Length: 313
Image 1 (cartoon, helix red, strand yellow):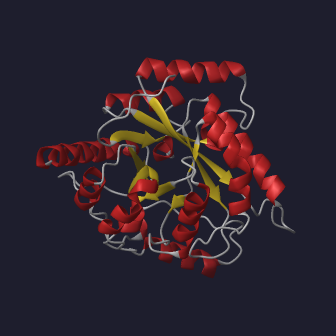
Image 2 (image 1 turned 90 degrees about the horizontal axis):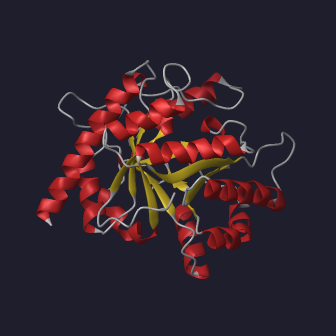
Image 3 (image 1 turned 45 degrees about the vertical axis):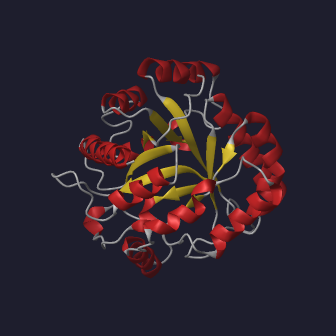
C-alpha cells in the first residue's frame, strides 16, 4: 500500500491494542479494522505478537490478506509496536548482537506490512523506565537497515518518564550525533495526565511473574499517579516526534477526557506543525463492547479539537 500524502495537520488513527477485551472474543481482526474505518479514523497501528498470527514468521497468505483489508477499509498502517525484551534470559541480559537481530527482524517485518514506524518497547532497568544501556548500540547497528527501508525507529516516552529527562536527552543526542531522520520519539499522552485515576479507570498492571504483591501494588499505584508534564514542554521536542499515542482511560458523556488536557495538547501539536498520526489508545476497563464506544467518543473529541485549531489558525 502506498503511503498517504503528508497531511498539513495530524491525522487520526487507532491502536488495535484498544480492543484488548474484544479482540478474538467478540471481534476479529477485520471487525476491528471495519470499526476503525466506520468511526472516521484513517490510520491503524498494531502490536506485533498480538495481532500477527505466526509472529515473527507470518505466512504469505496472511500478509496478502492484511494488505487487502487495508485497501478495503482505506486504512494507512502507521506504527508497528514490538518488544526488545532485554531480560529474555533469566540468568543474563541480551548481548547487543542478540538485540540487533530482534530489532532488525521487526524493522523488516514492519516494512513488509506497510508500516513506516517501529516502536521497540525496550527493556528497562528502573521503575522510572531508564532503558537498558544496550539500546544505543542496538539502534546504531540497525539504523542502516531502517534507513534503507525508510522505517523510523521510535522508542516510547511513557509515564513516569517526563519529557525533560536523561532518557529523552539520550535519545535526542543519538539523533543529533548521527543526523539520522530514521530515529525519533513516540509520545504517550499519559505523561500529561493531571487528574489521579482510581483502579476502576484502567487495566490491571502485570508485573512479570508477580513475585511480590508489594511490588505489584507499588507499580499499580505509581502508574495511576498524574505525572502532569506541561503540554507546552512538547513544543521543545516536537521536531523529533514521529508518532503520538492518544492515551485515555475514560470519556465522559459530554465527550471530554477527565484525566488528560487534550485541548492544550492538540493546540501544541497543531501550532508546532505536527503532521503525524494521533492514535487513540484506550486502556480503560476491558468490559466487552466498551472499547468501540470509548474510541468513538475520543475520536469525536479529537476531531473537534483539530477543527478548532484549524479555525484558530
